[in-house]
Amino acid sequence: MTVNLTLNGEIRTFFGDPRTSLLDVLRETFRLTGTKPVCREGFCGACVVHIDGLAVPSCLRPIGLLQGASVTTIEGLAQVDALNALQLAFKDQDVVQCGMCFPGMVMTLSKFQETNPTPSRAEIKAAMIGNICRCTGYERIVDAVLSMQSRENAQ
Ligand code: FES
Ligand code: FES
Image (cartoon, rainbow, N blue to C red; front, side):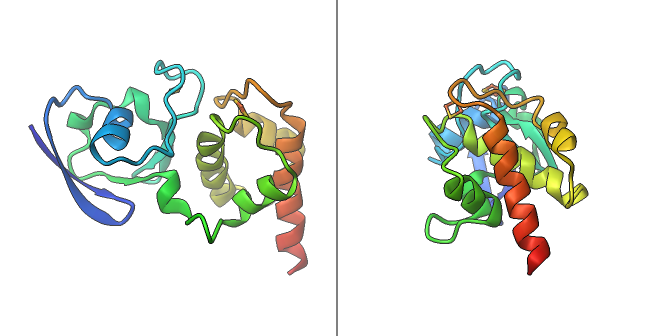
C-alpha cells in the first residue's frame, strides 16, 4: 500500500504493509528516532506524536489509516539548537534522566498547553496521566511546566 502523509511539514510517502504502526514507520522508514518505543501497547505514552492536531500514541496507529494525515514528531516541534519553551524548562529544571519518556511527555504537554496555557498543578498532573516515567518523580516535571508558565507570563 502507498500512504502519503505530511510529516513535520513535508509530504512523505510510505510503501509497505498498511498494518505497520506509525511508530515503526517513523523510526525505521523515516529514521525519526526521537519517538520512543517502550510498551508498544498504548500504555506508557513514550511514542506520543501529534496526528491532525491531537496527541496520540503512534504505536496504536496503523499507517494504513493515515492517508493524508498531518503528523508532527518531536523532531518537528523544535531543533536541537533551538529547543522550544517546554524543552528548555525541562533542561533548566534538570528533569531528564534516561530520557525515554520525554519526547512523549513534551508532545503530550505541548498539545495540552495549547488548550490550557495557564494550567494548575492538578491539571498538569491530569494531562500527564497517559505518560509513564520509570526514572524520575513527576513533581519536577510539573515544576518545569509551571516555571515555563510563570516565565512566559512575566514577558
Ligand atoms: S510505546 Fe506507545 S504507548 Fe508505549
Ligand atoms: S526519564 Fe527515564 S523513563 Fe522518564
